[in-house]
Amino acid sequence: MHHLRILGVIISLAGLNCFPALGQNPARVKPTLIIFSGSDWCLPCIRLEKTVFSTDTFQSYSARHLQVIRADFPQRSTLPDSLVGYNEVLAERYNPEGLFPRVCLLKPGGADFEVLRTSFKDAEGFIAHLDELLPKAEIFRRKALLMGSAFEFSLVAEDEDRARRMLDLCIAETQRLEALLSEWQSGSEVSEVNRMAGSGAVKVSEEFYELTKRSLQISSLTQGAFDISFRGVSLWDFKGEELEDWPDSALIERQLSTVGYERIRLMGSDSIFLTDSNMAIGFGAIGKGYVADHLRKILLDSGITAGVINASGDLTTWGYRPDGTEWKVGISNPNLPENISFGLPLSNRCIATSGSYEKYFTFEGVRYAHIIDPRTGIPVSDKKSVSVISKSAELSDALATAFFVLDTEIALDLAEQLPGVSCIIIDKNDQVFTSADIRLNQ
Ligand code: AMP
Ligand code: MG
Image 1 (cartoon, rainbow, N blue to C red):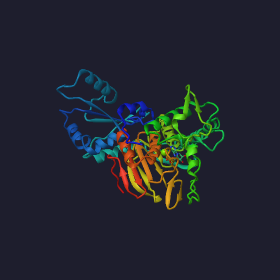
Image 2 (cartoon, rainbow, N blue to C red):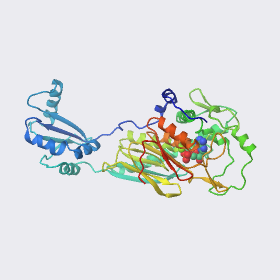
Image 3 (tube, rainbow, N blue to C red):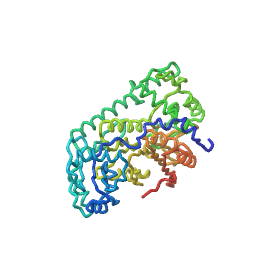
Protein backbone atom coordinates (compact mmCIF):
# COMPACT_ATOMS: atom_id res chain seq x y z
CA MET A 1 0.00 0.00 0.00
CA HIS A 2 1.46 3.36 -0.87
CA HIS A 3 1.34 6.60 1.00
CA LEU A 4 -2.24 7.69 1.48
CA ARG A 5 -2.90 11.16 0.18
CA ILE A 6 -6.40 12.15 1.02
CA LEU A 7 -7.64 15.06 -1.02
CA GLY A 8 -10.44 17.27 0.19
CA VAL A 9 -12.69 15.93 -2.52
CA ILE A 10 -12.11 12.35 -1.45
CA ILE A 11 -12.88 13.19 2.15
CA SER A 12 -16.18 14.76 1.24
CA LEU A 13 -17.03 11.90 -1.08
CA ALA A 14 -16.28 9.49 1.71
CA GLY A 15 -18.85 11.51 3.58
CA LEU A 16 -17.04 12.14 6.84
CA ASN A 17 -19.91 14.44 7.64
CA CYS A 18 -22.38 11.61 7.55
CA PHE A 19 -20.93 10.05 10.70
CA PRO A 20 -23.09 10.68 13.70
CA ALA A 21 -20.84 13.37 15.08
CA LEU A 22 -21.47 15.72 17.95
CA GLY A 23 -22.92 19.04 16.96
CA GLN A 24 -20.78 22.08 17.63
CA ASN A 25 -23.11 23.13 20.42
CA PRO A 26 -24.92 20.25 22.01
CA ALA A 27 -28.42 21.47 22.79
CA ARG A 28 -28.21 22.68 26.31
CA VAL A 29 -30.67 24.65 28.32
CA LYS A 30 -28.63 26.83 30.60
CA PRO A 31 -29.88 29.22 33.26
CA THR A 32 -30.03 32.79 31.97
CA LEU A 33 -28.51 35.81 33.67
CA ILE A 34 -29.83 39.23 32.65
CA ILE A 35 -27.58 42.12 33.58
CA PHE A 36 -29.13 45.60 33.56
CA SER A 37 -26.47 48.25 33.55
CA GLY A 38 -26.08 51.97 32.98
CA SER A 39 -22.60 51.52 31.64
CA ASP A 40 -21.49 55.15 31.28
CA TRP A 41 -23.29 56.89 34.15
CA CYS A 42 -23.95 54.35 36.93
CA LEU A 43 -20.85 54.10 39.13
CA PRO A 44 -21.89 50.90 40.98
CA CYS A 45 -22.57 49.33 37.55
CA ILE A 46 -19.08 50.25 36.35
CA ARG A 47 -17.56 48.85 39.55
CA LEU A 48 -19.52 45.60 39.27
CA GLU A 49 -18.49 45.21 35.65
CA LYS A 50 -14.84 45.67 36.59
CA THR A 51 -14.72 43.50 39.70
CA VAL A 52 -17.04 40.70 38.56
CA PHE A 53 -18.38 40.49 35.01
CA SER A 54 -15.27 41.35 33.01
CA THR A 55 -12.95 39.06 35.03
CA ASP A 56 -11.55 35.89 33.48
CA THR A 57 -12.97 33.90 36.39
CA PHE A 58 -16.53 35.01 35.69
CA GLN A 59 -16.12 34.77 31.92
CA SER A 60 -14.98 31.15 32.04
CA TYR A 61 -17.65 30.25 34.63
CA SER A 62 -20.41 31.87 32.61
CA ALA A 63 -19.26 30.28 29.35
CA ARG A 64 -19.86 26.88 30.92
CA HIS A 65 -22.92 27.46 33.07
CA LEU A 66 -24.92 30.44 31.89
CA GLN A 67 -26.47 32.22 29.05
CA VAL A 68 -25.82 35.92 29.67
CA ILE A 69 -27.99 38.72 28.31
CA ARG A 70 -26.83 42.28 28.75
CA ALA A 71 -29.38 45.06 28.78
CA ASP A 72 -27.30 48.21 28.57
CA PHE A 73 -28.75 51.69 29.11
CA PRO A 74 -26.06 54.23 28.22
CA GLN A 75 -27.05 57.88 28.73
CA ARG A 76 -25.84 59.21 25.41
CA SER A 77 -27.49 56.51 23.43
CA THR A 78 -25.14 54.94 20.93
CA LEU A 79 -27.20 51.81 20.59
CA PRO A 80 -29.20 50.93 17.50
CA ASP A 81 -32.93 51.54 17.86
CA SER A 82 -33.75 47.86 17.67
CA LEU A 83 -31.50 47.12 20.66
CA VAL A 84 -32.91 50.02 22.67
CA GLY A 85 -36.38 48.61 22.01
CA TYR A 86 -35.29 45.10 23.02
CA ASN A 87 -33.71 46.38 26.26
CA GLU A 88 -36.88 48.24 27.10
CA VAL A 89 -38.98 45.12 26.64
CA LEU A 90 -36.61 43.25 28.96
CA ALA A 91 -36.73 46.05 31.52
CA GLU A 92 -40.53 46.11 31.47
CA ARG A 93 -40.59 42.43 32.41
CA TYR A 94 -37.57 42.05 34.68
CA ASN A 95 -36.71 45.56 35.92
CA PRO A 96 -39.93 47.58 36.02
CA GLU A 97 -38.59 49.96 38.71
CA GLY A 98 -35.59 50.84 36.53
CA LEU A 99 -32.93 49.96 39.11
CA PHE A 100 -29.24 49.85 38.14
CA PRO A 101 -27.32 47.66 38.45
CA ARG A 102 -29.83 44.86 38.54
CA VAL A 103 -29.09 41.19 37.86
CA CYS A 104 -31.84 38.60 37.35
CA LEU A 105 -31.52 34.83 37.19
CA LEU A 106 -33.95 32.72 35.15
CA LYS A 107 -33.77 28.99 35.75
CA PRO A 108 -34.52 26.62 32.86
CA GLY A 109 -38.18 25.70 32.77
CA GLY A 110 -39.07 28.15 35.55
CA ALA A 111 -41.55 30.92 34.86
CA ASP A 112 -40.22 33.10 37.67
CA PHE A 113 -36.95 34.90 38.10
CA GLU A 114 -34.77 35.82 41.05
CA VAL A 115 -33.05 39.10 41.68
CA LEU A 116 -29.45 38.59 42.72
CA ARG A 117 -27.40 40.55 45.23
CA THR A 118 -24.88 42.83 43.55
CA SER A 119 -22.72 43.91 46.50
CA PHE A 120 -19.70 41.76 45.67
CA LYS A 121 -16.08 42.76 45.64
CA ASP A 122 -14.93 39.93 43.43
CA ALA A 123 -16.10 37.27 40.97
CA GLU A 124 -15.61 34.43 43.47
CA GLY A 125 -18.19 35.94 45.87
CA PHE A 126 -20.73 36.41 43.09
CA ILE A 127 -20.18 32.87 41.78
CA ALA A 128 -20.66 31.41 45.28
CA HIS A 129 -23.98 33.32 45.52
CA LEU A 130 -25.06 31.96 42.11
CA ASP A 131 -24.05 28.41 43.02
CA GLU A 132 -26.40 28.52 46.02
CA LEU A 133 -29.30 29.37 43.76
CA LEU A 134 -28.63 27.06 40.79
CA PRO A 135 -30.02 23.53 40.76
CA LYS A 136 -27.50 20.95 41.93
CA ALA A 137 -26.53 18.43 39.29
CA GLU A 138 -24.81 15.14 40.10
CA ILE A 139 -23.19 12.34 38.11
CA PHE A 140 -25.22 9.11 38.14
CA ARG A 141 -23.25 6.05 37.05
CA ARG A 142 -24.05 2.48 36.08
CA LYS A 143 -21.81 -0.40 35.00
CA ALA A 144 -23.13 -3.31 32.93
CA LEU A 145 -21.81 -6.25 30.95
CA LEU A 146 -23.13 -5.70 27.43
CA MET A 147 -22.00 -6.90 23.98
CA GLY A 148 -19.58 -9.16 25.84
CA SER A 149 -17.76 -6.13 27.29
CA ALA A 150 -17.77 -3.87 30.34
CA PHE A 151 -19.83 -0.73 29.68
CA GLU A 152 -20.12 2.27 31.98
CA PHE A 153 -22.71 5.01 31.65
CA SER A 154 -22.30 8.34 33.47
CA LEU A 155 -25.10 10.88 33.23
CA VAL A 156 -25.33 14.34 34.72
CA ALA A 157 -28.79 15.04 36.11
CA GLU A 158 -30.56 16.83 38.93
CA ASP A 159 -33.22 14.23 39.49
CA GLU A 160 -32.19 10.73 40.57
CA ASP A 161 -35.37 8.99 39.36
CA ARG A 162 -35.01 10.47 35.93
CA ALA A 163 -31.33 9.50 35.80
CA ARG A 164 -32.28 5.91 36.76
CA ARG A 165 -34.87 5.73 34.01
CA MET A 166 -32.33 7.01 31.49
CA LEU A 167 -29.72 4.49 32.65
CA ASP A 168 -32.30 1.68 32.24
CA LEU A 169 -32.99 2.98 28.75
CA CYS A 170 -29.25 2.91 27.89
CA ILE A 171 -29.08 -0.76 28.85
CA ALA A 172 -32.26 -1.74 26.99
CA GLU A 173 -31.18 0.13 23.87
CA THR A 174 -27.70 -1.47 23.90
CA GLN A 175 -29.32 -4.91 24.21
CA ARG A 176 -31.54 -4.11 21.25
CA LEU A 177 -28.50 -3.17 19.15
CA GLU A 178 -26.61 -6.23 20.32
CA ALA A 179 -29.47 -8.40 19.05
CA LEU A 180 -29.13 -6.65 15.67
CA LEU A 181 -25.34 -6.74 15.32
CA SER A 182 -24.14 -9.80 17.23
CA GLU A 183 -22.37 -12.46 15.18
CA TRP A 184 -23.10 -14.94 17.97
CA GLN A 185 -26.88 -14.58 18.03
CA SER A 186 -28.39 -16.66 15.23
CA GLY A 187 -31.43 -14.39 14.98
CA SER A 188 -29.40 -11.19 14.43
CA GLU A 189 -29.50 -9.38 11.10
CA VAL A 190 -25.77 -9.93 10.67
CA SER A 191 -26.20 -13.70 11.09
CA GLU A 192 -28.98 -13.69 8.50
CA VAL A 193 -26.82 -11.77 6.00
CA ASN A 194 -23.95 -14.23 6.59
CA ARG A 195 -26.24 -17.27 6.24
CA MET A 196 -27.40 -16.02 2.86
CA ALA A 197 -23.85 -15.33 1.59
CA GLY A 198 -23.53 -16.30 -2.07
CA SER A 199 -27.22 -17.16 -2.38
CA GLY A 200 -29.28 -14.01 -2.00
CA ALA A 201 -29.80 -10.47 -0.80
CA VAL A 202 -31.24 -9.97 2.69
CA LYS A 203 -33.64 -7.18 3.54
CA VAL A 204 -32.32 -5.43 6.65
CA SER A 205 -33.40 -2.57 8.92
CA GLU A 206 -32.51 0.97 7.90
CA GLU A 207 -30.16 1.20 10.89
CA PHE A 208 -28.24 -1.90 9.80
CA TYR A 209 -28.15 -0.80 6.17
CA GLU A 210 -26.80 2.64 7.06
CA LEU A 211 -24.14 1.20 9.40
CA THR A 212 -22.99 -1.14 6.63
CA LYS A 213 -22.89 1.75 4.18
CA ARG A 214 -20.74 3.85 6.53
CA SER A 215 -18.49 0.82 7.15
CA LEU A 216 -17.87 0.57 3.41
CA GLN A 217 -17.04 4.28 3.28
CA ILE A 218 -14.43 3.80 6.00
CA SER A 219 -13.02 0.87 4.03
CA SER A 220 -12.47 3.04 1.00
CA LEU A 221 -11.12 5.88 3.17
CA THR A 222 -8.53 3.51 4.67
CA GLN A 223 -7.75 1.60 1.46
CA GLY A 224 -9.31 -1.52 2.90
CA ALA A 225 -7.42 -1.61 6.23
CA PHE A 226 -10.83 -1.53 7.89
CA ASP A 227 -12.97 -4.23 6.33
CA ILE A 228 -16.07 -5.82 7.89
CA SER A 229 -15.57 -8.85 5.58
CA PHE A 230 -12.38 -9.74 7.54
CA ARG A 231 -14.40 -12.67 8.92
CA GLY A 232 -13.77 -14.71 5.78
CA VAL A 233 -10.49 -15.61 7.48
CA SER A 234 -11.39 -17.79 10.44
CA LEU A 235 -8.10 -19.53 11.26
CA TRP A 236 -7.08 -17.71 14.39
CA ASP A 237 -8.02 -18.27 18.00
CA PHE A 238 -7.44 -15.25 20.24
CA LYS A 239 -7.44 -17.07 23.55
CA GLY A 240 -4.41 -15.34 25.04
CA GLU A 241 -2.36 -18.52 24.58
CA GLU A 242 0.62 -19.75 22.55
CA LEU A 243 -0.45 -20.93 19.07
CA GLU A 244 0.65 -24.51 18.44
CA ASP A 245 0.91 -24.55 14.66
CA TRP A 246 0.95 -21.66 12.24
CA PRO A 247 -1.77 -22.33 9.67
CA ASP A 248 -0.81 -23.48 6.21
CA SER A 249 -0.16 -20.48 3.96
CA ALA A 250 -2.22 -21.96 1.09
CA LEU A 251 -5.20 -22.16 3.47
CA ILE A 252 -4.72 -18.54 4.57
CA GLU A 253 -4.52 -17.55 0.90
CA ARG A 254 -7.71 -19.47 0.11
CA GLN A 255 -9.68 -17.89 2.93
CA LEU A 256 -8.27 -14.47 2.12
CA SER A 257 -9.78 -14.69 -1.34
CA THR A 258 -13.22 -14.24 0.29
CA VAL A 259 -12.20 -11.01 2.02
CA GLY A 260 -12.93 -7.76 0.24
CA TYR A 261 -15.31 -4.95 1.05
CA GLU A 262 -15.91 -4.36 -2.69
CA ARG A 263 -17.75 -7.67 -2.75
CA ILE A 264 -20.35 -6.53 -0.23
CA ARG A 265 -23.29 -5.27 -2.28
CA LEU A 266 -25.80 -2.71 -1.08
CA MET A 267 -28.94 -3.60 -3.04
CA GLY A 268 -31.62 -0.95 -3.58
CA SER A 269 -32.09 1.01 -0.40
CA ASP A 270 -32.62 -1.77 2.09
CA SER A 271 -30.86 -5.04 1.20
CA ILE A 272 -27.39 -6.49 1.53
CA PHE A 273 -25.81 -9.26 -0.50
CA LEU A 274 -22.50 -11.00 0.14
CA THR A 275 -21.42 -12.14 -3.29
CA ASP A 276 -19.31 -15.18 -2.30
CA SER A 277 -20.70 -18.12 -0.36
CA ASN A 278 -17.67 -18.19 1.97
CA MET A 279 -17.95 -14.52 2.90
CA ALA A 280 -18.96 -13.31 6.35
CA ILE A 281 -19.16 -9.86 7.90
CA GLY A 282 -18.80 -8.66 11.50
CA PHE A 283 -19.09 -5.29 13.22
CA GLY A 284 -16.66 -5.94 16.10
CA ALA A 285 -14.52 -2.95 15.13
CA ILE A 286 -17.28 -0.34 14.81
CA GLY A 287 -20.41 -1.56 16.64
CA LYS A 288 -19.56 -0.28 20.12
CA GLY A 289 -18.68 3.14 18.75
CA TYR A 290 -22.02 3.23 16.96
CA VAL A 291 -23.83 2.30 20.17
CA ALA A 292 -22.04 5.10 22.07
CA ASP A 293 -23.02 7.72 19.46
CA HIS A 294 -26.57 6.41 19.28
CA LEU A 295 -27.08 6.56 23.06
CA ARG A 296 -25.60 10.02 23.31
CA LYS A 297 -28.08 11.25 20.71
CA ILE A 298 -31.05 9.74 22.55
CA LEU A 299 -29.89 11.21 25.86
CA LEU A 300 -29.24 14.67 24.43
CA ASP A 301 -32.66 14.63 22.79
CA SER A 302 -34.16 13.75 26.18
CA GLY A 303 -32.48 16.74 27.79
CA ILE A 304 -29.50 15.02 29.45
CA THR A 305 -27.02 17.78 28.74
CA ALA A 306 -23.83 16.05 29.87
CA GLY A 307 -22.46 12.54 30.25
CA VAL A 308 -20.08 9.83 29.17
CA ILE A 309 -20.95 6.56 27.42
CA ASN A 310 -17.98 4.24 27.83
CA ALA A 311 -18.50 1.17 25.66
CA SER A 312 -15.47 -0.69 26.94
CA GLY A 313 -12.90 1.90 25.88
CA ASP A 314 -14.87 3.27 22.93
CA LEU A 315 -16.41 6.34 24.41
CA THR A 316 -18.23 9.56 23.84
CA THR A 317 -18.38 12.59 26.12
CA TRP A 318 -20.71 15.54 25.94
CA GLY A 319 -21.22 18.63 28.05
CA TYR A 320 -19.20 19.10 31.23
CA ARG A 321 -19.04 17.66 34.71
CA PRO A 322 -21.32 19.35 37.26
CA ASP A 323 -18.44 21.49 38.51
CA GLY A 324 -17.95 22.80 34.98
CA THR A 325 -14.66 20.98 34.40
CA GLU A 326 -13.93 18.71 31.45
CA TRP A 327 -14.36 14.97 31.59
CA LYS A 328 -11.11 13.03 32.02
CA VAL A 329 -10.37 9.86 30.13
CA GLY A 330 -7.50 7.46 30.59
CA ILE A 331 -5.69 5.40 27.96
CA SER A 332 -4.74 2.00 29.36
CA ASN A 333 -1.12 0.98 29.67
CA PRO A 334 -1.01 -1.89 27.13
CA ASN A 335 1.49 -3.77 29.31
CA LEU A 336 -0.64 -3.41 32.47
CA PRO A 337 -4.17 -2.71 31.19
CA GLU A 338 -5.54 -2.03 34.70
CA ASN A 339 -3.25 1.01 34.84
CA ILE A 340 -3.48 4.24 32.91
CA SER A 341 -0.64 5.36 30.65
CA PHE A 342 -2.05 8.75 29.77
CA GLY A 343 -4.86 10.92 31.07
CA LEU A 344 -6.59 13.35 28.73
CA PRO A 345 -9.21 16.00 29.40
CA LEU A 346 -12.02 15.44 26.90
CA SER A 347 -15.37 17.16 26.50
CA ASN A 348 -17.71 17.04 23.52
CA ARG A 349 -15.29 14.64 21.83
CA CYS A 350 -14.99 10.87 21.47
CA ILE A 351 -12.13 8.43 21.82
CA ALA A 352 -11.73 4.76 20.96
CA THR A 353 -8.82 2.42 21.61
CA SER A 354 -7.82 -0.82 19.92
CA GLY A 355 -5.33 -2.84 21.95
CA SER A 356 -3.30 -6.00 21.58
CA TYR A 357 -3.99 -6.67 25.27
CA GLU A 358 -7.70 -7.28 24.65
CA LYS A 359 -7.69 -10.50 22.65
CA TYR A 360 -4.54 -12.04 21.26
CA PHE A 361 -2.38 -15.14 20.84
CA THR A 362 1.38 -15.50 20.90
CA PHE A 363 3.62 -17.40 18.51
CA GLU A 364 7.39 -17.77 18.81
CA GLY A 365 7.60 -14.87 21.26
CA VAL A 366 5.47 -12.47 19.18
CA ARG A 367 2.06 -11.22 20.26
CA TYR A 368 -0.67 -11.10 17.60
CA ALA A 369 -3.70 -8.85 18.23
CA HIS A 370 -7.28 -9.77 17.30
CA ILE A 371 -7.14 -7.36 14.38
CA ILE A 372 -6.62 -8.99 11.01
CA ASP A 373 -4.70 -7.35 8.21
CA PRO A 374 -7.10 -7.75 5.25
CA ARG A 375 -4.13 -7.63 2.86
CA THR A 376 -2.47 -10.74 4.30
CA GLY A 377 -5.11 -12.49 6.42
CA ILE A 378 -2.62 -12.45 9.30
CA PRO A 379 -3.27 -10.72 12.65
CA VAL A 380 -1.30 -7.53 13.31
CA SER A 381 1.79 -7.77 15.53
CA ASP A 382 3.63 -4.45 15.27
CA LYS A 383 1.50 -2.35 17.65
CA LYS A 384 0.19 -2.55 21.20
CA SER A 385 -2.40 0.18 21.22
CA VAL A 386 -4.04 2.75 18.94
CA SER A 387 -6.38 5.46 20.20
CA VAL A 388 -8.30 7.82 17.95
CA ILE A 389 -10.03 11.02 19.03
CA SER A 390 -12.72 12.60 16.85
CA LYS A 391 -16.23 14.01 16.99
CA SER A 392 -17.81 10.58 16.52
CA ALA A 393 -17.27 7.43 18.61
CA GLU A 394 -18.17 5.31 15.60
CA LEU A 395 -15.55 6.96 13.40
CA SER A 396 -12.96 6.79 16.21
CA ASP A 397 -13.71 3.10 16.74
CA ALA A 398 -13.37 2.18 13.07
CA LEU A 399 -10.30 4.34 12.51
CA ALA A 400 -8.54 2.91 15.60
CA THR A 401 -8.88 -0.54 14.04
CA ALA A 402 -7.77 0.73 10.60
CA PHE A 403 -4.75 2.58 12.04
CA PHE A 404 -3.81 -0.61 13.90
CA VAL A 405 -3.53 -2.35 10.53
CA LEU A 406 -1.75 0.46 8.67
CA ASP A 407 1.96 1.19 9.06
CA THR A 408 2.45 3.72 11.85
CA GLU A 409 3.75 6.38 9.50
CA ILE A 410 0.82 5.99 7.13
CA ALA A 411 -1.70 5.98 9.98
CA LEU A 412 -0.26 9.24 11.36
CA ASP A 413 -0.26 10.75 7.91
CA LEU A 414 -3.90 9.82 7.38
CA ALA A 415 -4.90 11.18 10.82
CA GLU A 416 -3.25 14.50 9.99
CA GLN A 417 -5.28 14.73 6.79
CA LEU A 418 -8.66 13.97 8.32
CA PRO A 419 -10.27 17.07 9.83
CA GLY A 420 -10.85 16.79 13.59
CA VAL A 421 -9.09 13.42 13.89
CA SER A 422 -6.14 12.85 16.26
CA CYS A 423 -4.37 9.64 17.16
CA ILE A 424 -1.99 8.07 19.66
CA ILE A 425 -0.09 4.93 18.72
CA ILE A 426 2.00 2.74 21.03
CA ASP A 427 4.08 0.30 18.99
CA LYS A 428 5.43 -3.11 19.98
CA ASN A 429 8.59 -1.47 21.40
CA ASP A 430 6.53 0.86 23.62
CA GLN A 431 7.41 3.81 21.45
CA VAL A 432 4.64 6.42 21.47
CA PHE A 433 3.65 8.34 18.34
CA THR A 434 0.99 11.02 18.22
CA SER A 435 -0.54 13.31 15.65
CA ALA A 436 0.77 16.86 15.94
CA ASP A 437 -2.10 18.32 17.97
CA ILE A 438 -1.81 15.89 20.91
CA ARG A 439 0.09 16.68 24.10
CA LEU A 440 0.26 13.88 26.62
CA ASN A 441 0.67 14.00 30.40
CA GLN A 442 1.96 10.69 31.62
P1 AMP B 1 -11.43 -3.04 17.82
O1 AMP B 1 -11.16 -3.45 19.22
O2 AMP B 1 -12.41 -1.95 17.67
O3 AMP B 1 -10.18 -2.76 17.06
O4 AMP B 1 -12.13 -4.27 17.08
C1 AMP B 1 -11.52 -5.51 16.92
C2 AMP B 1 -12.51 -6.45 16.35
O5 AMP B 1 -12.82 -6.02 15.02
C3 AMP B 1 -12.02 -7.86 16.21
O6 AMP B 1 -12.29 -8.62 17.36
C4 AMP B 1 -12.82 -8.35 15.00
O7 AMP B 1 -14.13 -8.68 15.42
C5 AMP B 1 -12.93 -7.12 14.13
N1 AMP B 1 -11.85 -6.98 13.12
C6 AMP B 1 -10.64 -7.57 13.09
N2 AMP B 1 -9.89 -7.14 12.06
C7 AMP B 1 -10.65 -6.23 11.39
C8 AMP B 1 -10.44 -5.40 10.25
N3 AMP B 1 -9.29 -5.40 9.57
N4 AMP B 1 -11.46 -4.59 9.87
C9 AMP B 1 -12.64 -4.57 10.53
N5 AMP B 1 -12.89 -5.32 11.61
C10 AMP B 1 -11.91 -6.13 12.06
MG1 MG C 1 -12.48 -0.26 16.46
